[in-house]
Image (tube, rainbow, N blue to C red; front, side, top):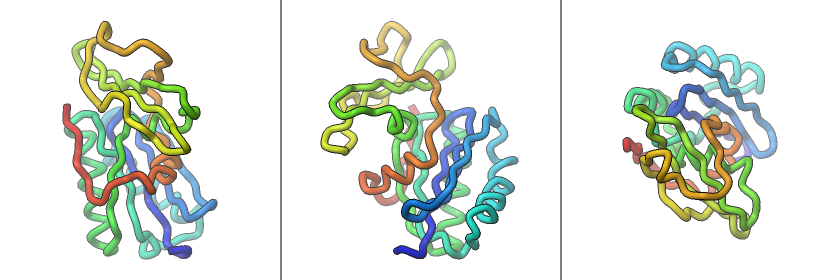
Length: 181
């Protein structure tokens, strides 16, 4: 697997999170695109491939953010990701977008609740903790009103992190199960 690149992609939020990683090597980009993910996606992918010196054919796995997020936003990553995977015979894995947003900030034994602002004064949220270096789900992704947000440290509208998606690969599941809440 040492010569294969992993493409990470998340479009569940107003950000396009895209990365290419291989072991310690790699680059990630997070660009605020609002609802124009599809316009930016392939241009940014070509830029990243050029910067890391890889060819598209060297992508052997994809880690896609599964949401929660808007139906249209999620569909872009999943459709583009599945299409790229099919063209390259690459494996596809899914990871919670909320977990990918929280992962860089998760500390051992300290719960954290990442939140994405949804419509109508609602949030998508979940609570995670890192135990023994592994993510544990204390509250699975759910839609909630402000007064239902659990107490404790929160992370509001942080973009899913491209390197976090890669680092979460050992805890990902094969295939994708989009989370439309």
